[in-house]
Amino acid sequence: MNRAATVITDVRGRAILDCRGYPTVQVDVWVGGAPGESGAVLGRANVPSGRSTGALEAHELRDGGARYRGNDVQTAVHHVNDVIAPALVSRDLVGTDARDQRALDRFLVELDGTADKSNLGANAVLGVSLAAARASAAALGVPLHRYLRFDSCVLPVPMVNLIGGGRLTSNDLAFQEFIMMPVGAPSFSEALRMASECHMALGEIVVSRYGKLSANTGDEGDFATPIVDVREALEVVREGVAAAGYADDAVYALDCAASHFWDPDKKTYRVGGRDVSTSELMDLYAELVRDYDVRSIEDPLHEEDWDAWVELTERIGEECQIVGDDLFVTNAELVRRGVETGAANALLWKVNQIGTLTEAFEAAEVAFRGGFGVCVSERSGETEDAIIADLVVALNAGQIKTGSPVRGERTAKYNRLLEIEEWLGAAAVYPGRDFRRPLSSSPPLEGSAGPEE
Image 1 (cartoon, rainbow, N blue to C red):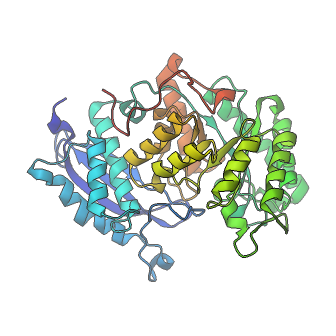
Image 2 (tube, helix red, strand yellow; image 1 turned 45 degrees about the vertical axis):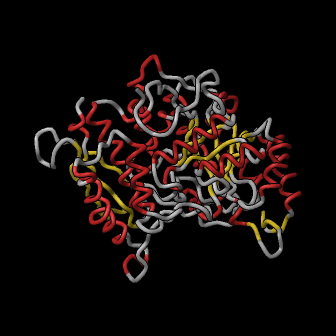
Image 3 (cartoon, rainbow, N blue to C red; image 1 turned 120 degrees about the vertical axis):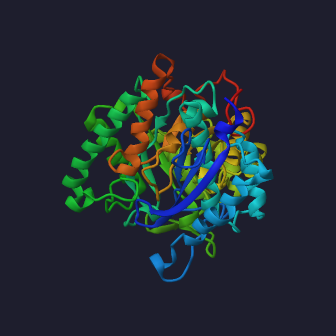
């Protein structure tokens, strides 16, 4: 294909709403011709937003003021339309080739000129980065996952959030997510069926035990029960899985988001209505791994307590995946520190935490090369854009966390993965219990985002 077919001809941004009713950025990137012209191809991407965020995440630009109670994104949209668009379309007087993702993203980073993308806004920059990748894949006539990696074949094990707490649910449960993973399924589609049936069975249990208001859900489709004790939450989740008939096919996971129940003055964590020390919290995690088949724990400790992360990983890391989210914020340098020090053994991969596709792929590459697992994740403020379904397959990551299969912005990702499974056919791999290293004999990504030659 000649270069003209993937040269960026137009970039347009607009404000849309995410699943919480907050504004976010949507970007269109056109290649191969102006909109409406023969040969013109559109790539579109919506930018997600997190509520539970790490301190070092790239800067999501909000307007302040009265509109949407300060949460409007008109400034970020303006930066897409009036700063980024003309720069890309006229770049070096010959335009920008969207297929050169690395060069495109490097240019966006330089155009912003700040370490955290606070000038243009990470939401503006990421929208352009993702939309350009989509436009290139569409121009070449291949799915995005295959455009980004020629041997993409791994369908992820879904980490399905069944009971919620923390900042994502209106209750007093300290840990943010209580998750089942259908590792015993023979395929992704069967795993999704199991997860959906577990959600149905659990719904009946929580209503009968805690009342019909417990059928209400949090931001990610999980049940908002009045449970306060984390052991009780895990017990109830296991009951739901057993009632659905999949007790032997599931393991369990937690997203603790511990930075949000850490008291910096007392140097303690608030769990189950009492203050506990770091040592006591680590004892609790060891107990949950032993007694409840917990095989993945995300953000178990405060994001700045690297020494404690190392200690916990040494203690339970062989049995349980220790996942850094707020600790790493999808930043290659922070992941490298984790690999070198032994803090955690897996990366939670959120593309909007860093702001470009290339930088996010670089973080995944560092993780893979360091022997870490990689779990691709949505944000609580999602849209119907299913792009992370293609990205998790492009990474051959083996794990995805995108909520319960009951809300449109969540099921969009699952439904896209069903399409990819069908497209891959016999080549599709479902890693099951090997979700931490789904292709141990396969090399990690070579470099960052961009089509394989």
